Amino acid sequence: MKLVLLRHGESEANFQNYWTGWLDVALTEKGMQQATEAGRKMNEQGLVFDIVYTSVLKRAIKTSQLALEEMNQLYLPVQKTWRLNERHYGALVGKNKTEMKKEYGEEQVKKWRRGYREVPPLVSENHFDRRYDSLDPRLLSHGESLEMTVERVVPLWQDELAPHLLGGKNVLVVGHGNSLRALTKYLEDVPENQLDTIDIPNAQPIQYTLNKELEILGKELL
Image 1 (cartoon, rainbow, N blue to C red):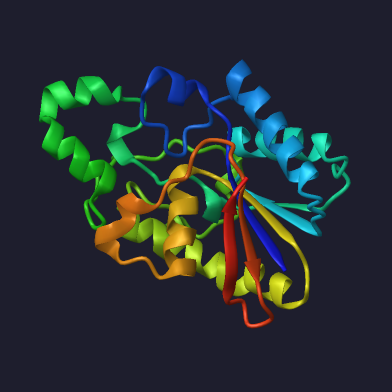
Image 2 (image 1 turned 60 degrees about the horizontal axis):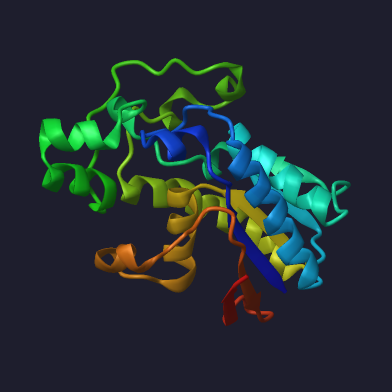
């Protein structure tokens, strides 16, 4: 079976270098081109998917649409889930990363970005729209560490992604840098002190080939 992980194309936040988290920002023109190019690469590989998963944030949703259109697979069922959202950066959301280095120091910013259990300053109140209304409020964090992001993503693998793959289906997962890093950590059993070795570039498909026991037979960056 084939499992492909795809991070969204360049977003406005990537371009302007600020923390996004669950903030719903658009793709840049470059990001849209990257998404289409990702679809072309997957099409060249002859990839045919059975189901697609994305976050509920438009930069991932739009990336999935542009890639699938390029592959002539827009008809596929797409499941949108908050579990694939980017890491919730708490009170850092909307803050410029360079400015935060000046204010808090490079070491502290590095801890917020890469420390496995480092929780960012929490936001006092979430201002979410109705896309999260059906969720138990206890599931809605006010700021997440990487560890908490892993704990959010793993149930999606266990409850939905793995059963589809065990059923012989090919799955495309379109998410974000940290949600896909979390999934990669779990799939490859990457030690927490080596998370920096997991590279999830914008709009470059990461293809896994799995056997019937969901053991990884091969991994390729397309």
